[in-house]
Length: 127
Image (cartoon, rainbow, N blue to C red):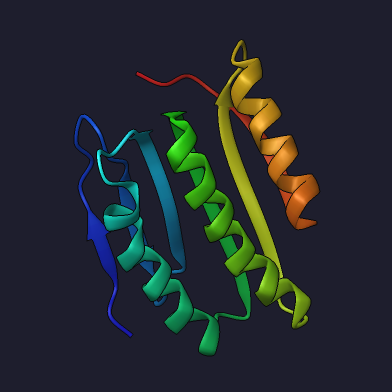
């Protein structure tokens, strides 16, 4: 399975999806003009990953900001991981947020409730 890496832009997050190195990370800002066009290849990659996942799946979200359109696609991504958990796989979501960013923490808590995934909330400072 090939890895996928996309560098961040002013509108899109950095993406690292590498099964062999056990790195699944989305970081930065997500406000793409065409959110579906940006996230579609990521969803396809995850479909392939789910067919033959690692024994443990740890996913890192280090999002500084995302718009409403991105929030739906982030939920779609999390539902992919929920399907893994439902099959008995261990899945952990590490959600980084700034200490004073109540909105980002609230979004993560909502995602955790909707997906029934295990979330670890990590306070950080974005540059």
